[in-house]
Image (tube, rainbow, N blue to C red):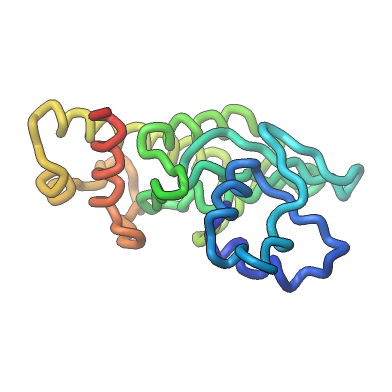
Amino acid sequence: HTHGDHTGSNEFFPPTVDIVAHENTKANMEKMDAFKGDKVKFLPKKTYKDKMILGKGKDEIDLFYFGRAHTSGDTWVVFPSLRAMHAGDAFAGKNTPIIDANNGGSAVEYAKTLAKASSSIKNVDTILTGHSTLMTPADLKEYADFNNDFLTWVQGEIKAGKTVDAAAAEFKIPDKYKGYSVSTFLGGVKNNVQIAFNELKK
């Protein structure tokens, strides 16, 4: 996806290297100052919409897009020969998600995207997250449920006439999600509640 901690080293690759990203990520990157002027050459040369296969045999890498979550261009990278997948920042381990609405992230679509990834990916045992520990497909399914429960809770808060501040202050991680914690990054839960309110009240 578009964030600098994932794209900031593009300029250190030689020109012979093709940078690949989801089409929405390229569009998001084009708005960044880091890729203006002569740095435009560090934008992705190749993009894809739903799936792209790179290499073959043991070197095959499969790129998937399942929808909006952390941003509008989160790529899920599968290494079939290793039975491993990199989920990027869309899968935040056992933490509340970080949603960047300015780059197309969605509180409403987050759980749906995770559920689609969970049901679509086969033959993977290990999932690498963007900033957390190694996880499993069972953890991913649970994380989809966790985000779905969050959305249901926000809908209830809106129905009860709560403000964003009141809802965010009341949020507690449900008891069934053992070991989960609240991330404070990028505005934390209040940011997620605000984005959900904005989307649901449209």
